[in-house]
Image 1 (cartoon, rainbow, N blue to C red):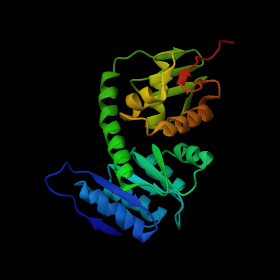
Image 2 (image 1 turned 30 degrees about the vertical axis):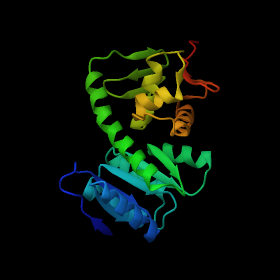
Image 3 (image 1 turned 30 degrees about the horizontal axis):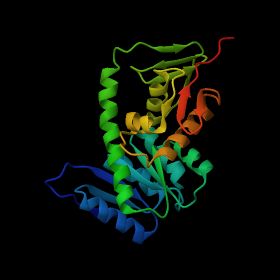
Length: 241
């Protein structure tokens, strides 16, 4: 493993970079260090799980194609041990792969090749989202249940149930669902959702919204979120039997 140290005058952040291509791993670590963060590199999935347990990073950058243990399995194990934002890297621009990655617990993805500038922008957005989620959670402590009959959302405990059975959602999936469900049947643009959920101020991540919506539909049913083509999405409450 390679270890680099952050500048002491910057806000301390620790990023675990999981990448088996040494040149790319080093380039990412150097760019992270230039931001004033601490970078730690793991070259395979098993090492990443161990490093995440010991290091308790603020963010994980995870390649999908890894030796020993692939990035999807490593992501599942890392987020199961402790919630942490994960940005997955994939060499294939395949929507199914991205949905699978998000379903494993990742919060965002990037397709290789990518610019280091965009990578850092995505990392900063994810870190901001974590801080924003803490504020939202605090403000939601007294929020009433969003009860739609068979589907119930508990903002205070961050729990979603369908027909009384709890459905596991990633933190980002929960925030996206709750944001839509607070305004049922109202159409929210992708840009608005990026701002509300991801704290992004531009439209560069609209495909990320699309992928998370697909992941939610997979878990909650295809009719839960309606697509308004060219605009955005709307939450559709379940129809009572």
